[in-house]
Amino acid sequence: MNIILLGPPGAGKGTQAKLIEERHGMKQLSTGDMLRAAVAAGTEIGKRAKAIMDKGDLVSDDIVIGIIADRLDAPDVKKGFILDGFPRNTAQADALDRMLAGKGLKLDAVIEMKVEEEALVARIAGRYTCGTCGKGYHDTFEKPRKPGVCDACGGTEFIRRADDNEKTVRDRLAIYNRQTAPLVAYYGARGNLRTIDGMGDIDSVTRQVENATAYATRKGWQVDDRYIFIDDGISGAAFHCRASSTRAPPRPR
Image 1 (cartoon, helix red, strand yellow):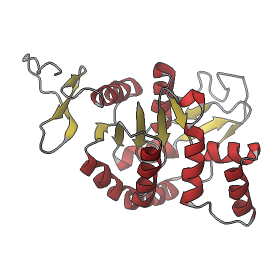
Image 2 (cartoon, rainbow, N blue to C red):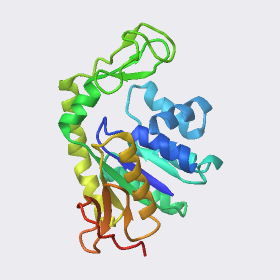
Image 3 (spheres, helix red, strand yellow):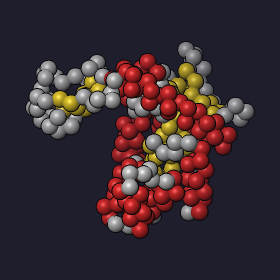
Image 4 (cartoon, rainbow, N blue to C red):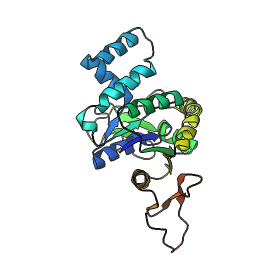
């Protein structure tokens, strides 16, 4: 199973990617991590990337695709991969498709996590971490059990990123929306886009992600306690809030 998690900053892509990785043995692939690893390992493409970065320039899409291609040859990716944060535009999506096709691979699903902007601002602007161990906290959603003391290590110094403020978050969301709107149409036209509601708690979003990945290999209905995953064969597949009805949905085909 090979999937992309698509969503704005703060949507919870990283959290869901880790859960998928743990449950299914798939590998989360971060382009930043792969780039640093290739440079550190001194691979041919890593050397090319380092030469560009040493000049202060941005690494080209061709190099990023090359690094992903090399990573897909590793044994720990045999059960599938999860791409989070890539591609960011349709040119990268085209290049990714060509590279996968050259390896006899394909994307099984692109899962779009939709979250309202105000909720994203609240999620990101409230984040902070322990300065000693890096454990994450939030002003509203996850506070230390004892105020001012880290639950994990007992540290008392906390760090809040300078760019985790409302203005910067809204600017980042505007950039994301400009870049991503074409990607939604791109993958929607290919029939592998799955849109889920990312407004719920972690468990409810996880259930939707699980249903979306299951749907990728079995066309039909996938149901949890609050959502129905529908493909009408015309407008494509999407999650819909389940009406309060005792009527059972059709069984998967």
